[in-house]
Length: 147
Image 1 (cartoon, rainbow, N blue to C red):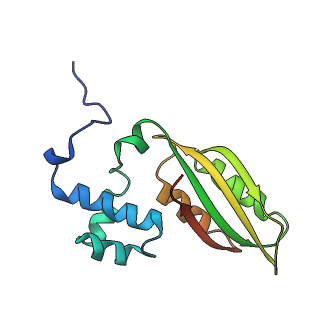
Image 2 (cartoon, rainbow, N blue to C red; image 1 turned 135 degrees about the vertical axis):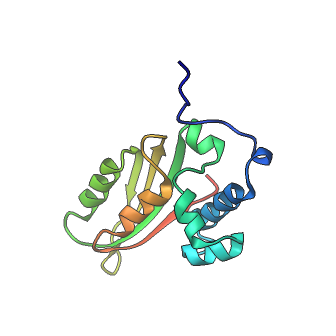
């Protein structure tokens, strides 16, 4: 008996336009071109609800099928245990940590750059960034592009 596979590779031209627009909105958010979902939806010409509905199901082929390396910049207050909280959050989101570089804190703020490998099991980079932003004392999370 045939079972529908969890993932399909489909040429963009064969899909409804909404999926391409959601992918574009995700790119806008991940690259930092826009700061929130409302602006991404407006630029992509779709509703916010469309982004929420499809964001965890629409990925460019390379990020979903081959494992995506994502580098993040994280700014946080210089508090004991903050780096441990970041690492714990990365672990809880199922990513493979490739590199961590923490700079010396300046004016009570520490800058950390982290490279992780995402795959189909770990979820999306937007979810990971949201989880990191939710940590107390994390003031900024940005995806570094042009890797």
